[in-house]
Length: 76
Image (cartoon, rainbow, N blue to C red):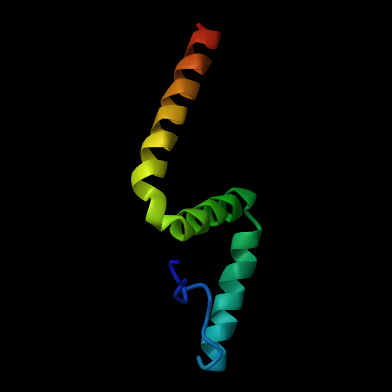
């Protein structure tokens, strides 16, 4: 399975205190915007599913196109 590496917003415990504090400030500011929190969660889920991207991305594209066309038909 794909092992996660430390991401820039996940400081290493051996990092200097100022670096951890800066990361905490960024986390706090991001938490103020629910859309950013959701986008980051989706991005992390996609990173965890990297092995199945060749199947997942085309499936997401098909679902997106189908939903987009249905909404366009509904509004016209």
